[in-house]
Image (cartoon, rainbow, N blue to C red; front, side, top):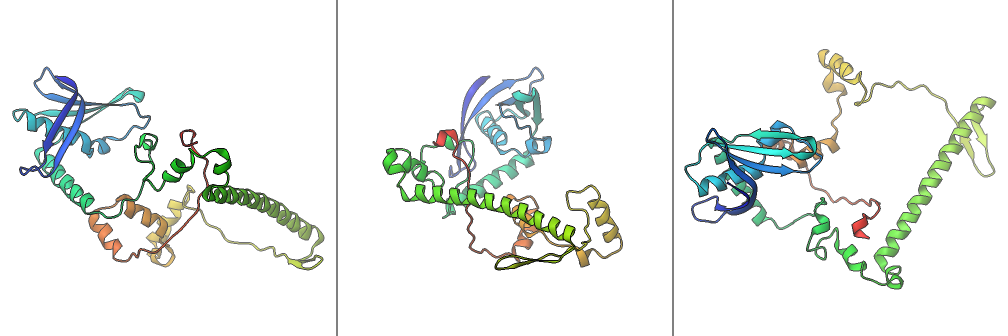
Length: 283
């Protein structure tokens, strides 16, 4: 029926929640049903469960049925070209109702938001507002500077110095590991526990430490099962709070469970410095 088809519609009768999109292709099958096609060039191939939860093509279906109310049977089809694979999904009337309500709630949440934390993605290089983004505006600011000004710009100076110190620290840590290993070898060979230097001494101890399989080891699940079967899990289990925070941020659990977990959480200031190389398009 058409390609690159524009659909404009509202999620409510009052026209408050307006939507617009472009369908890659809309076609009619011999059996009388309609198909909304979306072509993906990404190397990533999602599972069927993710396709069933996809918001984009579900909204396209609303747009099509808004424009042509008589259309009832619609298939949603993703063509993953890199994998030569198609994913097919359907939306029931209940699914559509739920999608509408969830999308309206999301729009309300966005419009009420006061803070908009930036998020890197493959689309950053095409962004039209790098001068406003906290993750891009310094790059935007200094890229036009002549070399003599660029090298003396305070941010550039600080990053260069920090990178230099990080490299020195890595070299020092590597050298320390070598010296430590040599000290241990010397102590074992000479049968000594204290080694005297010019202004200090090194005390060396050789101990045996009981170790168990790590989370990534094959036998870890068997060990956990043994302890749980004995009813002693609460005495030895340890909560990985970093993983828990990641689960809450990604919404991997049910909202009900996340809400219960959040009762025990507190927002605290945090700061880190991470070094990475500039992408080619950022230079």
